[in-house]
Length: 281
Image (cartoon, rainbow, N blue to C red; front, side, top):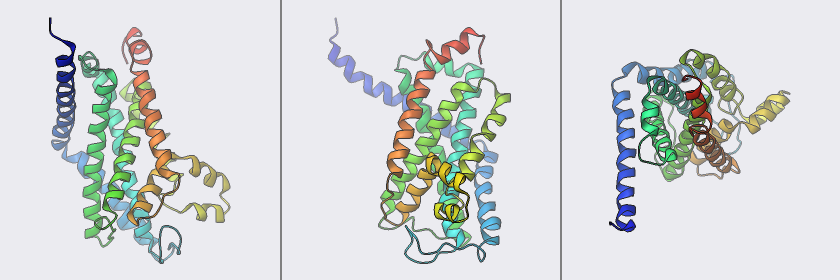
């Protein structure tokens, strides 16, 4: 009878092979969806080229952390637009999960001889990788439009770490939402109650001190509890090599919480199994 030790050694290569296969599948599927890439880039570029340009001379950002000098509005808004790319693709990943569940692919994947959390982690990594690829394209287009960010410099590693953690957090949020969205028809309505509040009640478009100064106290307070705010702030501060306070901890805690709840919800004995007993999603 074979010993348990060789089986344990062969488990990791098998798990990594499954991870790479799922990520490669998502990448290949995305490479054939030219409209998805175009829409992912056009949306933030329009904000940068039209919205930010219109407010360039009306709304500037005074000298405040993490900035050492006065900056134009388009430089301030750029990290928020990177966050927009990550947010929308994270929610797009939720749609893909709902579609795969309706088509039966998720049930097939969850029956694989691998821990269920590992299969979900592979889907999470695939969504985050797509988000980061789209964000990189946006940064290149923004630079071509004249909005140059210190992405390549002494703080590149810190910014990449912040972007990766933020992409994973938003992908985990999308994964969690896919547990509760049972039909594709319900996706658009649900997303309107997630994407727009998260984006507009955050520091993606305006600093927290501006909200407090203008008297919008309830928006200021909600923005402080919004995990998307902390994701944007972490990336913004990392660009300039500044400490982001509690933002990294909030992002990482939200990532762990959302992924844990999603793994719990996809357990056949709990959320995912209940969907099956009701006749499917």
